[in-house]
Length: 434
Image (cartoon, rainbow, N blue to C red; front, side, top):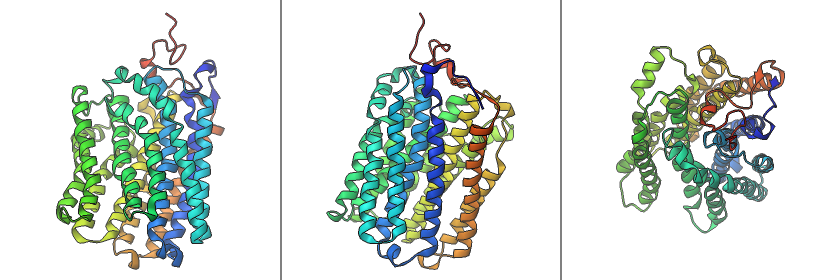
């Protein structure tokens, strides 16, 4: 790949590549661990299921998924807000802590000894949460510049960054406090999977359609209202589980509260307009579109769990959200940005059908396999579904390595489209020649 290094002061605009490759490696490592846990279902896993599931979910949410989110932030936010790039040492510190944390937690799961598992998980979570705390300084820089992006994403543009350092501290606290409160792990799990990540993914959808493709799914003047209602619904959903545990509200009412944010987000992002994009064959990333259409299905399965008292449906809803929504949406967004850096016309971009088909069909098969319940899982179907998901992981890895290492296409520090946010595109973000 030929790289334009003329704007050396502008390194952060392409800093996503290193974090993307780190996320790819850890994603495949996680996939192997995840498959092994489901297939083996040994005494260690069954006896410590809550802690094992918490470990796996944190490896995803705080590990390689967060790595992708932060990579996008390092690369795009200095451009969008026209501020000086973040310190390069900060990215290296974040990546090192993130990968060390995931490796420690994975090792703890594989060893299978409860004391070593808890020790390694504590070490791993400390690394992962510390990596989020290091993002406080750039988050403050962006927050001070919020007025510059009000017409693009409104509060969605900066809310996530400001939440990350606090999220890291809270998650580590919930793990340490698990022996003092039966609700501690559930609190941490739902904070990130029911509050933070749904907010992050709707932000990704808005960024792709509202900002990048300029579809105006939501009018700029309504973004603040949408954000306010959506975050309120997520908080109510988050609190509903605790109220249910205390028997203040019924299962049926909780099911409605749990499904509402996903359905609301789906409807407010105008499925009619997105379907029209597809019918008219207008340019968009099909993986992001598929991730968007998985969103209400997450709510449906979470509601079914509460209506039927069947915990397996909550596991299914988690799996759909992680693989169908988050993984597909984030990798799709990252690839679209990568092609922006290569300045490929949006009308000439191709769909990677192997990744798209194998990931979505694999997810559907795993859903079917998990539906009978934890004690009646069809291991053959899990293996088939996980293998198809594995093909998606490998195809993503091969595509990135091929395009980053072996491609002869020219790659530019300043991606197409985003230079419109800069006072002086020739100098880069945070510079003004006037």
